[in-house]
Image (cartoon, rainbow, N blue to C red; front, top):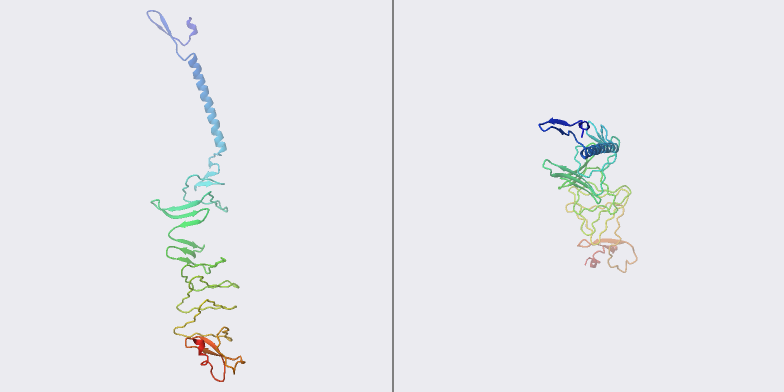
Length: 288
């Protein structure tokens, strides 16, 4: 074979004669190399096109990605956002003039931790109830005035007026201490204990006043008015006792409608027809 057909050959002279060696890649190896180089270029172009498409779809810019913007004060997120993992942040706030919404399919839990990652305060808003777990719960006004406070020892209502709008009123399983109990204007005030006793105590007195209506006290067995060291005063232009028992009437005064109020030794009151003198002694059978 002529030497001109192999321009990249190297010729070595020996004692037996010149020898020719090929330099480079030829044949099917050369075609495979070109194929791999072409395939690599295609992959690079596809990767570049996919990268540009992702940047376009995700709205990558110098300031951030999509609705997420990187500012000097932190991250700014616009629109609706969904967090699949826990979110740790120092401060979360909305844009000026816009509300901030927290939405979850089950519940939203806010935990306050200490240095040892122990939960100190927890607020859970679930589908059934809103629960707050803490040592003390307080509600204050913008000026700092206490409206409501609750802890293990007591519950304090700091408002000037506590209104109960329920149709059944308010149930207190134990005692209640308050300086004033009154109903709304033109509404009735009712204090009731369906199965037990109702006790009102005060060291300096109890005043029951109905300025524009009547006062009614009803019981099933006995109603007692007792004063240990003082007196009981009934101050009214008319005092009516309609259901007092009547003693046996005499034949001489059976037609008159004037009665005498008598008192038994046990304190029971009864009526006896009045006569020229007292008739209470005649009707002592009522006291038995």
